[in-house]
Image (tube, rainbow, N blue to C red; front, side, top):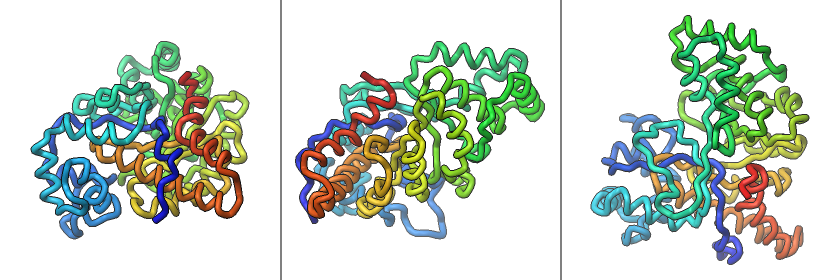
Length: 366
């Protein structure tokens, strides 16, 4: 195994998409369910500790809790419980080397704490667009477009996020919807009960409104929980919308992307406002992360790729996301230098771009 390049090991990372960490301790079933995008542990399968990410926890997380590598799962969980959630969160978040977090707090806000509370780092809000719509539609369809505009104008968030992939799929038209279409969509929504925002017109309206106000928009793409119909989460389905919004000059950021990470790289190459990452695929692929990252970086310009963990609930996922990202990036750069694809100075530049500078530029964090 190649050693980690020192300049990669020392990177101060900006996690451009993540969630909070759980405030409470978990039993084994709760921990395993939080390890992956699965909603529950299957009674027909083996333990989720018997997966790439599960083995990674036992190998790479155990030593941070003063346990030997590859400790048994029950021993790991017993030690974790004895330390308490706050200490576990602190240990893994500090070890990650992440100094700034862009946090989507749209899920379980009452159960989750912001990651920066455990590191002293900076935290920036990401506004979930569908949640905003669900909060505003209760006041009625009439005036909904203006209420959205007002809320976006006031938000302190540095970016917005669309989960259209979950709700309607990513085949969004490039046409900007008129207010009358939006009101009609709201009326249909309210007539159906007014719960989840799941209308193509509304998804498109929310994205246009955010971009026109200069808010970068993140899209969930590809791998997610079972609410996603995977073929409808292919980023190539966004092509019409990307063509139409290019003129705005505001970043569109494609999250996760696996197994469409090569497709996402193509989109980042041909559209100047498109950026991509690997997100939760990094820790879920575990020891295979180097191969997947190399595939993701095949054609993407290095100034268009960002680091993220998409960590949710478990602080271990921040640590593993950063650890496997560093190992994978180091492997990629070492191979490139050995083949004289670029110099060591170039490799240092690439590592800083991907580790933090691309995020700072795309979200204007400085």
